[in-house]
Image (cartoon, rainbow, N blue to C red; front, side):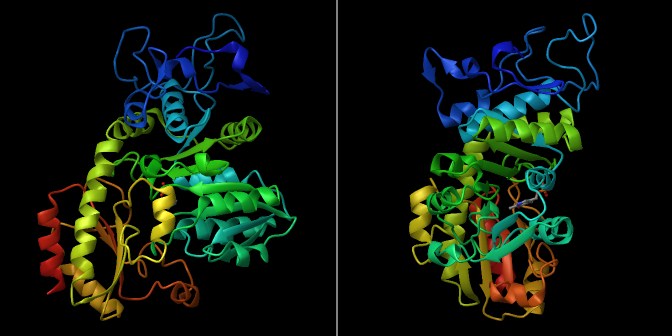
Length: 409
Ligand SMILES: *Cc1c(COP(=O)(O)O)cnc(C)c1O
C-alpha cells in the first residue's frame, strides 16, 4: 500500500490518497478493462507477498511516534482493504478517486450531503425505490427540493432546471422499466447550469457503461449487485472525477462514518475479479430469454434494451457495450394476482429482492422494490400489477428458459 506523500489531498487530519497510477502500468502499457478488474488498485501485499489483498481486520494502527505513521491511523478514516477496493472502482470507472460505503444508499446519502437547503435536484421518475425514499422522506425535510421527470427528452427537462439545480441524478437503464437516458445529453444539460451529473451505474456496471467518459461527474454503485456479484454482501461505491468534489466526499465519508468493513471490501474485490466473464454470460442469457419471452403468447411486453423494438435501443447502442442481464416483462393478464401466480411457480428463479448475482432472481416491483412509490406515480411510469422483473443469472440458459416456460403455462 505505497503512500504518495506528494499527491495527498489534505483536509484536517485525513489525507485522500488518489489512485496510484504506477500499479496499473505494465511494461509501459495501461491495462485493459478485463485486466483492471483483476489488478486495478491491487498488488501483492508487501510484508508477506500475499497475492490477495488481506482483510485488514483492525480498527487502529501503531504509530512510530505521535502523528508519524504509514498513512493509516484509524479504520473509519482509512483501511488498506477498503483502499484497494476504492482504487479498484476508480480504475474501472476511469478516474483517480474512489470511495466505499456500507451500502449503496450510504453512498447516495454521502452525495446528497454535498447539498445545502434551497438546492434543487432533478431526477428520473422511475428511480430505484430506496433512492426515491431517501430523497423524498429524508432529504426533502432538510429543505432540498426534488423534481422527478422522464428524462428521455432534454427539451422538456430544460423547464425543470433552475439556477438552484445543483445535482442531476440519473439511473440508466432505469429500474424496473429499463428506459435508457442519454448520458452525454444529460452531461451537457448539467454543464449548462453548473450542476453535478451523478449516474447510478448499478444496472449496467462499468463493464457495460462508463459514465465519466460520457461526461458524468460522479458514478454511484450499489456494489451489492453486479460488482460483488454473489449476493453475499451489501456495499456502495462512488467514483469521482474532480479532486475538489472527491475531497469533500472523502471528508463526508469520514465525518458521517458510513464506511464498509474490511471483510465486505474483500468480498467485493473478489467479486469484481470475475465481473467481465460474469457480465458476458448475463448478457448472453438475457438476450436468449428476452427473445423467447417476446414471442410468448402470455407476455404482453418485454423491456430489455437489446431488443430492436425497445424504444431506447439506439441510446443503448450509443453508450453501452452490451445490454445487461435485467429484463422486465408485463403479462397479458396485468393483475397482481396473475404475476403472483407466475412467481409462485418458478423453481430455478428465486423470488427475492436484489439483482446482479450469479443466480437468477425474479421480483414483483409493485409489492417489493417499488412498494414505497405511491400508486398513481407508479402507474404513470408503467409499474402495473402484471409487471415482473427478472435478474438473469449465469446458469445454463436452457434451465432458465424451461423454468419460465413452465411458470407461464
Ligand atoms: C440496490 C440499489 C440501490 C441501493 O443499494 P443498496 O446497496 O441496497 O443500499 C441503489 N440503486 C440501484 C439501482 C439499486 O439497484
